[in-house]
Image 1: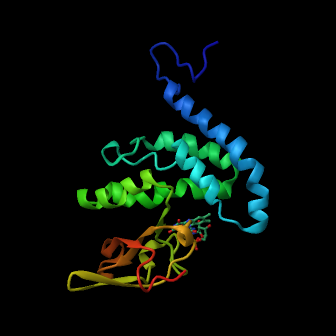
Image 2: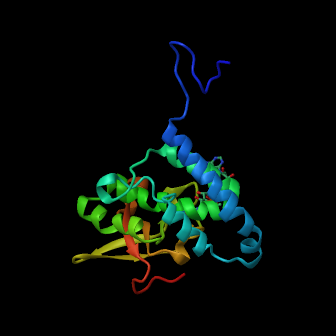
Length: 205
Ligand SMILES: Cc1cc2nc3c(=O)[nH]c(=O)nc-3n(C[C@H](O)[C@H](O)[C@H](O)COP(=O)(O)OP(=O)(O)OC[C@H]3O[C@@H](n4cnc5c(N)ncnc54)[C@H](O)[C@@H]3O)c2cc1C
C-alpha cells in the first residue's frame, strides 16, 4: 500500500530516515521504561527528576542540537521534535525538563561568538548539567518587549536587574540565558541576551 510515509512516485516523501526512526524508538523506550513508571510519584512529591536527566543525558537524548564542532550531534529541529514528542508522551513535566536545554542553549548556538560557544556548549555534552532560557517576566509573557529587566554597562561588565518567572529548570541550572533591556528606548530591538552562571552573586531563586 502506498502511504504518505512511503511517498508516491515523483512526489515528496515524508518518510523518516532510519536514523530518525532509531532516535524515535530510543526515546519511546526511554519514556516507557524510565519516565512513565516514575512520573506520578515525582508529580506528587514535586521532585526534580535528576536521575532521569542523568540517564537521558547518558543515552544522548539531550542537547541534540549542539553543533558537532562543540561535541554535539548537530541535529535539526525536526529530529529534536521526534525525541521531544516521545519524552513528553512519557510525562509532559519531565519531558519539558529534559528538552529545555535545547531552549537554553539556542541563543548561544544561534548568536554566540565562537569563544562563547566553546565556553558554554561542550560542558552540556560532557555532564548532565542544565541550562535555562530566562525571557518571561511576571509582567511580560507574550508581549516580550514590555520586559522590565535592564542590563547597564559598568566598565567591562554588565549589571543586570530584574525578575523572571516560569523559567524551566532555573532552580537546577548551571547557567541561564537572561534577556534584559540594554536600550529601553528601542523596544524589542533594545533587548540583549546574557549568559549568567546561576552561582553569580545576586542571583536568587
Ligand atoms: C510549562 C511552561 C514552561 C515555561 N518555560 C519557560 C522558560 O523556560 N523560559 C521562559 O522565558 N518562559 C517560560 N514559560 C513562560 C511562557 O513563555 C509564557 O507563559 C508565555 O510567553 C505566555 O506568557 P503569559 O503566561 O504571561 O501569558 P500572557 O502573555 O499574559 O497571555 C495570556 C493569554 O492572552 C493571550 N494573548 C496575549 N497577547 C495577546 C494579543 N496581543 N492578542 C490576543 N491574545 C493575546 C495569550 O494567547 C494567552 O491565551 C513557560 C511557560 C510554561 C507554561
